[in-house]
Length: 337
Image 1 (cartoon, rainbow, N blue to C red):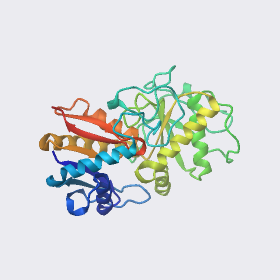
Image 2 (image 1 turned 30 degrees about the horizontal axis):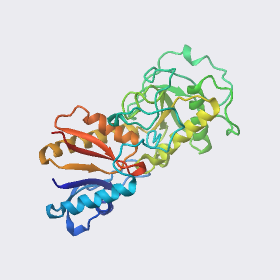
Image 3 (image 1 turned 90 degrees about the vertical axis):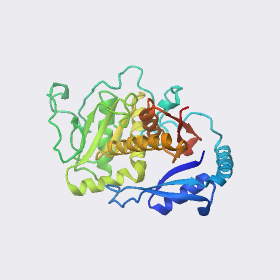
Image 4 (image 1 turned 120 degrees about the vertical axis):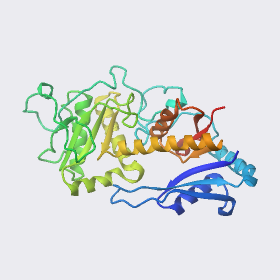
């Protein structure tokens, strides 16, 4: 069967170069199909990567397979070695929290659920970096849903930034949720992003980290300018957002000694990305059923590979497998004979 690779990039040319590098072939040895032209966004918001599907010429299939084998050898083989921990929701490795589940189709990067808690259980708190002189948050009624201008769901609000910039770690926290929320608020204040709203909620989907994270903190700008500035904290493909989440969890773990993991989303980015990955997985599955080819997706963080695996876990006629190691780990979608 033909060797097929689908990759993305800032433009069609970059996506094609990445595909050729994976296949180890030159431009005249492949067919290039443009799946999506892509478009530029503003500060990380509203843009789309270009996507191409590159197929090795039938006469060069053996050459492509040999090149792929050499590439896997340089990366450490096709084995199912452990993923880099915590890729979290796309970030660097999270603090160690014990063995990972063995099933490849359920690999995750945000860490296992806390031993003493239920990840889907709703926990709420108020955090503002100062002594709390308001009534305890647990006595408040449910929060009104956000205005429809934002895509996020309702959650418990984290109060506004402190009057003074934080100069020391938080020590008077009630629990890990309280510490995480107030720490996130302090980080935004230090970055000058004070005109923001943060809410805490239970994870709802695989993209949120359902089954892996304790709570998700949603960040929205209170005006258009702040929302645009928050785009800098998302970064390309969510890399900066992943780093922010990693930093939050490292600070929380070192301060409390606990092992709960928290997710962070900005302007609904993760939910949009999850929907895009689900649509990609379903489209690729249809193409694999029709062509019988094995289609290799571009390298993804563990949290995104998990979405692909879960989406196609019960799909007829196809199966998925992760190959490679470290940052080069990819998902292959293949016929299930």
